[in-house]
Image: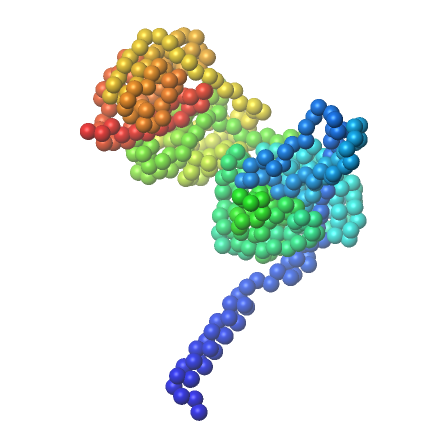
Length: 469
């Protein structure tokens, strides 16, 4: 007979077994998705002719590349016997997927960059030579074309509908193993990465490795919601942080490449920075949010539309700007010539500014700084400043401002100011001369965050500090 303890143990075991069965039943079955989607996922290999041995050109040292956000596939350079005049080839491997029955294929730009030959291998092991239709390094998207009719295609989804915690699945060729399937969840959306201003990445914990680049990321409906593009790694291998380009962004780029041969993006013409707690306090904001305008490009869309240095942009066309990195994503998605309606905080008051968006130029202009002219010393901040000459103001496109000539002991040294830095605003007031600087500095409040706009090597930013009693 069961005693009381045995009965309790038996019931507890049944309960645990029931929970395990329920948990197993709740896990998704990826089998139908893989069977239906796999035929449209392809392997991409490339060849690039390298300089002959003994030539002046040097092969890049891959070991010296930064480990964080390195490109997925690495060029595999075959070891050839030593000898001059021998032609060598670099090979690479990646993934892609077919988006149209007549042979258009989507992949990453870095998979096919500088390739002399591109081969697309289908699931039936047949190989087709591909032509590069167009590529966009800024989003890392490339469009290929192979000859074919009635080819299998993927279903395209809506990446804007993705939710954190949602199941997703990747199919690709990591390390050359065709049609490898890995699964995980969406860890975050709208993620910004260093030097990637125009892509609001999808972050997942799906296992991604070299060779997965350019492969599709599916939702449970079997729809492509992203292109696997990057990983965060300190070892060179997967560490649980993978990033995919949203399919909405990728398809907009692909369609422009197919029809126009290039990609047009919106441009505002500002330099922005994050609003931290101290900056929020100094600008009278209730909480740190928005994009602080640190610099307005002369003659750019923002200048023509009335945006000013010190404006904090809180929303664009009704979409909130929580982090400063949200703004480039929204601006880049707008068509040149369209109007952006922005809510900004200026001098403590909210107002609306309408700006006609321009076209993103190929390269930005940079300016440099120097200093000379009448001096003003203010030991309260611990700096000596002088007025800019007419030539310096013209080169910097400034109406005023002062340049730091010497750093003394005090707050300036503590916050990292340097000789040569140009101060254009202090405590939300424009500095048009050394005399104005001295007056404003003498009236700075104590034990409260104070903002200062500084130009260093042509780049503007706001910094904050506090004066003690």
